[in-house]
Length: 285
Ligand code: AMP
Image 1 (cartoon, rainbow, N blue to C red):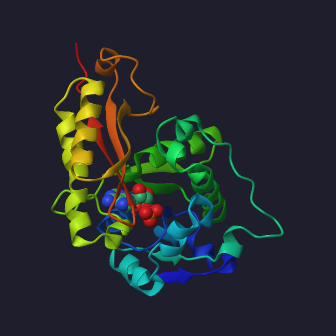
Image 2 (tube, rainbow, N blue to C red):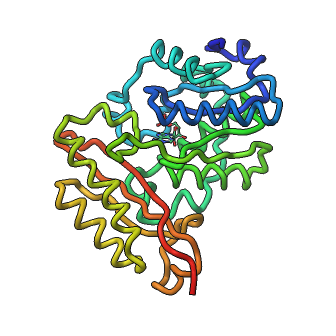
């Protein structure tokens, strides 16, 4: 495995399978890297799995969140190598966003701006995500890229951005990796106290409970009640169309299209923000 820090070092990484990350790697990232290795093998891509590590300032809408985001490049490089990566590309801000020739931002896909989800609580976040992904694809020319289902709206937004911009990159989703407790693995979990971590378990439990209800309104009420009972501050706890992320107009329409239950909630005194989601609904008469 080799590490590239600048543009003239990435040539052997061109045309591989890209795994964009912000570092602070955990078992979720390892699953993405292994998936990238498999796709690269299946498609006989010599560049293999190319992991990018870049804490993207453009996608943080709170300076404090950006500042406290965990960073440990040496550990991440070893971690990526152990998971099978062929290259780690860890550029600095000036390489990604050169001040003299700023990259053009792609138009924001509709699915990224659906009211009541991420864009409502993190305005500008998906502009930043689409901007950096578009730029990384432009630099690395990947044949495919892997994104986690844990960030479900992000996965839909990236797929839509790639389609809208006609980029020749296959976007592959990777199922959410969870700790044994059910909590979705996240770089932010390391900011949680033991108490916060116990409270945060209400998130996967609420998603499970919601799956038992056949009506979107009822499922949403169940989730909100369970989250607030565990002292979480709910940003959203909703059931939406799995692809467009628009609300179902009524209970009947929820039987015609697959749904997704999505949660964003803050936990603890410092308000660590956690998101999670799961399939919802049963299609049928
Ligand atoms: P991040 O470093 O948090 O920006 O995440 C980089 C990639 O890892 C994104 O595609 C995330 O969706 C994905 N990811 C993060 N956590 C998980 C997880 N628990 N399971 C699967 N993928 C994940």
